[in-house]
Length: 87
Image (cartoon, helix red, strand yellow):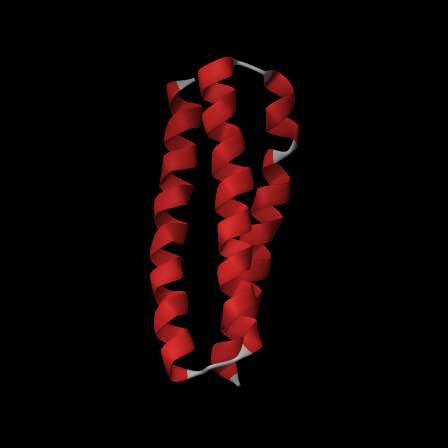
């Protein structure tokens, strides 16, 4: 369970740092895709890391089934951020 918790913390940290990048990008390129990327990262943190935190603390196994939904949120956030900065 500690390994599961550490995975949640690691991705939480990475994407908290990416939110700083979103804030910086929003100040340079005010685009709705940048803001959407920030919301996608927040969604990903809540669902991905949150489900891993709850799984490791409570042991409720079905929470592992919703973890990939948060991973998709992370992917969408990265695609939107790269797309906004590219343009």
